[in-house]
Length: 354
Image 1 (tube, rainbow, N blue to C red):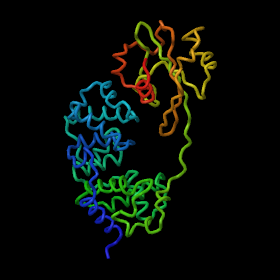
Image 2: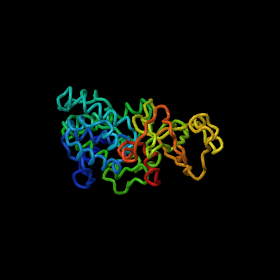
Image 3: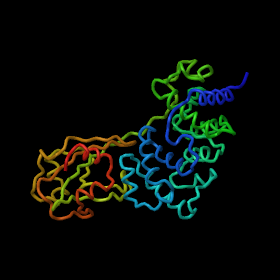
Image 4: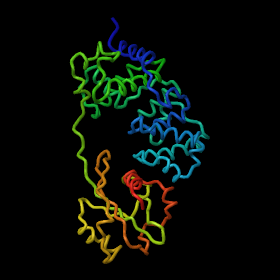
C-alpha cells in the first residue's frame, strides 16, 4: 500500500489529466513574461476578475519591452478597478528593470525571480515551475485549504510556524518531474472542488484518504488565528471646478490608492453631518460662507478593503470655485476620463453624471 503522500500526488495528477478542465487564458503558458503578468494580476484577486485584465495587458503590451516603455498613467488606467495598486507600481518597476538591466531576458532561476520587486515566494515558485519546470511548490490559500483538510492539520495557516510547515509539506508532495502540472492541479482542486464553502467532497478524486471527508471536518479546516480589527475611514469629496474644468490631484503619500487621482478631499475619523461639514475648517477655507447644499450630496458610498472600510459622499458644488486649491490642478472632462481613479470614485462616476 502506497503512503498517503505518494497517493495524494498520484491521485491529484490523475484527476488533473482526466477530469480537470478549468479554463484560464494563461494555463499552459511557457512565456515567463506572460506568466509573471498573470501572477501579479492574480495576487489578492479572483481568477474571474483578473481574466479580462490579463487579456487587456497582453493585447496592449505583448512584450515586457512594450510595457516598460509605456507611461505610468496609461498603465495605471489599464489597471484601474483592480485594486491593490502597489502591485501596479511593482509591475512597472520590474518591467523596466527586465527591459533595461536584463535587456528583456526574464530571470530563469527561483532565487533571481524571487529578487524581483513585488515577487514573493508563491509568485516566484509559480513562475519557476510553470515557465522553467523548476521544482518549487506554490503555497496559496487553495493549497493551504487542500493540505489542511486532506492531512488533518490544525496549525493556523496564518501563523509563522504554520506557513513554514505547510511550505515544507507542499515541497515534499511536489512531483519533481512535473512541478508545473502538479502546482496547477493543486490550485485548481482547491478552487473548483475543495472550495472554502460547500466543498464538493462526494465527487473529490482524493476523498478515500482525506481526513476532512472521513471525519466530516471540512467546515472547520483550515484553522486561522484571530484576524486584525478593521478600521473605518470617512472620505468626503468636493466635486468642484471652474470654466468647465474640475480640480483633481494625484495621491502621493504612502496610503491607499497612491498614484491614483481624486477630487478635493475632506477626510474625517467619523461620519460628518451636513452641518458639521459646513463648519469643517478645510471647507470654510475653500468656500468661505458658501454653504453646501443637501441636493448636491450623494447617498453614502462604501467600499470594503482588506483592513479598512471606506465610507464617504460626493458633494457637487453648485457654484464655481475660481481658485485652484493647493496641491490640485484643473482638468477637462475629456482628460478626466484618461486618468486612473480608485474604484470608490469610478463606481460613483459610472452611475452619476458630473
